[in-house]
Image (tube, rainbow, N blue to C red):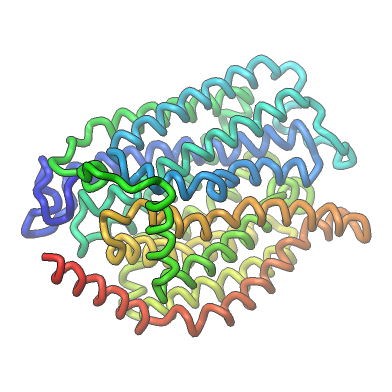
Length: 457
């Protein structure tokens, strides 16, 4: 891997016009294809889980174990991505996910005879899993997939600055986010619904194929002439390197509150989505096809948001852009909790995700610009420890809210309650975030990073 000022084999970073080069487009293609598989999984995993159990806690546990690696493994993986070749780590992460998904596909294939059809919604009074073995397979596979997702995502984000010039990071990230959104929530879910209707196991075989193709594309990216992750001969102990990354982020006046705010934001999001499949089936009255269409709402907004985020941020300022995300999320989430017609929820998902893409494009590009390259993996991992580590907590909280509320009121109101609570929580978070995330503070952080790079030579 090379730094942004060192020539890669395709001269992406050093080109005077700073164009996005072949290495970027290989990574772009790999990410798009794997996100297509993820989109298929958006339908396959929750629908499979809902065929096995109707218990909100057990449904939420799938989301908990999927995000648990972000809480448990993020920090040590940050050291790994600073020590080893990031391109190689991405390849092997996707190879591992291919193997795991194939194993799930065969497990589902072997149990299909005891599962209800995909259009059958089980009785909501069933308190436990009807197929314990398959439920445990889902949990174990989801935990392993989440672990390799942590490794892949942290490697990919720290790899991007080595193949894209700093002044192109927002453009590169914006294009990738929008295209990933198309594959993940616009193309993948409808395809997943079609595959589920044919066979419960078929979408998992398709998902495994996308990971395999993604791994092959990343393997085609030329090896860099210099890799900051592996060119240091003498290394500090792991604990010392972790501490160095933690101290850097915790001492940064912008990234510290940004990580904490994003953690709470993500926890609220996972709280609302913990029992989404049950909310969609029982309150919005969707089948697998309607559920797939519902999930495409975010894609439409994400595409628009991904391609326009950079210009919107320039027009209204990066600080107000982040405030807009929190305000819009609050309004959309609370309103979803009042809805009973899924097309209206589709529109709200489109609005919320479209505006939410602003956060991703601005903050990811910001981190890639201001964190020193030799610390990028560790600081990113600490940032994500706060930002993503809250997700399993949010998922579990969402399931608990539904179960507890159901004791005192109707099942329908219980399924609505996480959305209503989440909407209010977003507004409280906005009041906390507004003075901490301002355009002036963001630009100061960028200029300070540029000054450090100039001094470093």
